[in-house]
Length: 321
Image 1 (cartoon, helix red, strand yellow):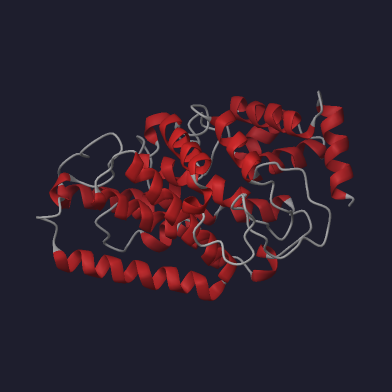
Image 2 (cartoon, helix red, strand yellow):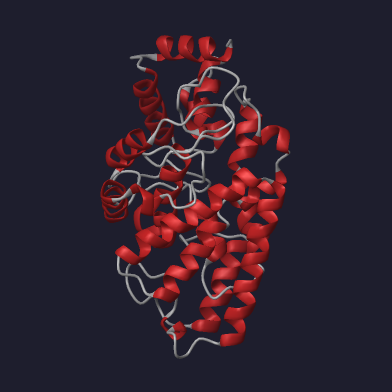
């Protein structure tokens, strides 16, 4: 947690630190040294595993498509963690957090999750709140891993352009960095209600382009190598609708696919189209001016435009579909 960060997730982390004491075993480990296999309290682990399994099942009942995504991200995160040399107990905690990373979306109505039209600014902001909501749902469970904190941070990015706190670099838990890479790959290789899958090649390009800037370089390298070596190992739960490259056909979109902007970029672009200045956008969203400019430059590049006028026109055209 960064200095000054507060809230349920921070209190849970402080409580766990006081109870368990020791620092992480390695730069990638998110589990205290006392939880080596021979010493971890068996009863606590049984309770933690049972609680985690019940929560994963709850997600599946609420939205099977989100449940499948959670299983896929959990599987990918486990593959990456093991290839990075993490201990099995640390990997177990990361897999659990990955399997619950979007649990905060249970607060959202199904109609919003299944919506094919572009989301409004208010809807996008509500969607982004899922990381905080998920952390608050999990923070009172006495997991022997920082599950709530990893869920809170899974949309943070190394350069500070993520959310909800705009954390940078080493202030983001290593487990959350692994989950971020797994989440991007799983999300981009499956259809969503509002767009068809960009495909495995596009997902790997996204990870390569963000390597060391948005996503941890080591985690990206491992993920890309795994996909290039044998996609069937990376996508074992794709089911009968899977394509040969591991991408998955879900419900076909009923409208033309939208240009792929991140949720944060979409909010910034909506406000830009309303005529708001970058300073006003930064103030309204509680972001730094530099962060807003980073979102704008990346959105311009994605939209294939060079300036504000072209960007606004693209947003208006897209909204009118």
